[in-house]
Image: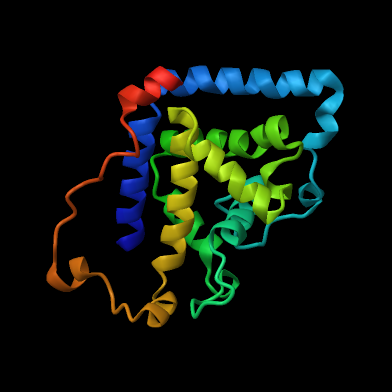
Length: 209
């Protein structure tokens, strides 16, 4: 039930930021940009050593590329060195992401898959390699730049972060270091009331898209 609720929130976030026409237009532009990179002789930059590594047997709901993207995002977004927090490799973060994505409507899931691929490959244009191959500093800077970009970029960065953070913190094994004993919504039987808006208005995003 918790995964389904989180999936509803993520789906609403996606729909808010990704009006279908805008997404299709952006997808065409993104594909054209990647094609231009390849035409310029930089196609090899889009290859990754990870392309030769298959995802684990349990990752039936993720493509190999999606598995590697979320595994890298887990490492980048959940640094806990020097804290009492549980290391993310001890939490089934990517498995939980897979479960969350599995609750999305098939059309939304397909759109998210396209967005994830573009997020990974677009790093070639500005960073010289795919997101999955960036070092920690560059990967965080890449997230920051997308978080301040147009509405499409902001939505993708926000959705990926939300998936990773939710997948980590929804697991009760992560709670003891923070002395958290569970959501009050579960204890008090509070109903889900919807989502807060994305950072900055969609209207402002349209102007910047």
